[in-house]
Length: 454
Figure (tube, rainbow, N blue to C red):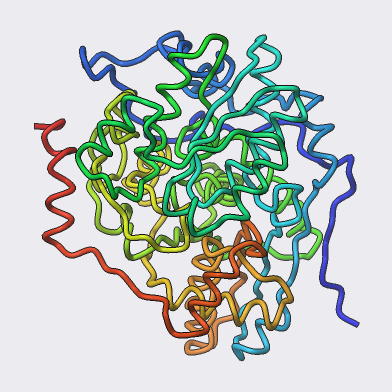
């Protein structure tokens, strides 16, 4: 019988997060105050963010950040997560490639998002904060933060993108089960939401819009701070527990990845699996390829511009240097709601600009086809977001079949799709549509960012 899982003992849960900013040859450009265009300091972020998160956000010197022991104790409920050799998928593809996946779907929240949610909730509790708020696309981050808030005794309010709120009722049920208050976004409960609905009463929402609403709530509610599930540097850093475990697990398997793949929305799960391996490219001359898989309907890395832009639709955030489609971007209503964000994380954008990673965009029918093959071979129904990583992996494995190369591929299974079955129903019945952003649409959305950089 094949041995499929290489699982490290609990004592090997990482003790530190890896901060890739400290080793990057070209540091990310600074966040800017939109009014003065001056670089931000950590204290400029304190009114919105938990102070420890703000300090981590702008830390470009410390390579390793200790993981608080109360957070590690919570991690022990599900970490270390399994690293699995996908033998059956390899056989189905007839590829000489060795395919491994890190299974983050085993967390209590069902995805990798809990890695940062627990850290942010702990830092908030330690600071004396009583309320936290956030946005969520498909609901994985909202579910994770709801769970983490309950663990550390905090009240949690989540603005969920309206199209996902309606598409994924069980995601919102998960958040409510953990005790969070859920509001579909855009809503009439904030000035930002009212302005958007005044312009378009049928607006189905975006992550940029939901961010605006959550930030407004944080700024107008006593003892409340805003938390974010992707894009920002400290979030990506918290997720490096994934790759740090995978690095040791790959060594147990006697292999090292030639290719590392993750789906890409704002960049959190891609960072988690990629950054610990990427440091060896930077520091040791390794030649691993890093591939970000994004939807063709939201192609910020493959078709966006590297510019300063707002992280939200209403323009409440600092200006961030990133690959963007423009902060007014309205994505198609694809089922991979966690990937429907207009911008890429600042660190990831700089690494992309410097050639340390690459990106591909994929249509959703190709990704669901890949997800079904993965379910039939490996026995796990993947979330629509993770299907993008699987589809990209299949492309690389098929290329190995064509060339005869035996490459080792590692991808991050960032979450399960057990509450996304309506999307699979639509694919199986032939109702799922592909969306591709036209050049005219792209140019229109980019106007908002281009004006900021004129």
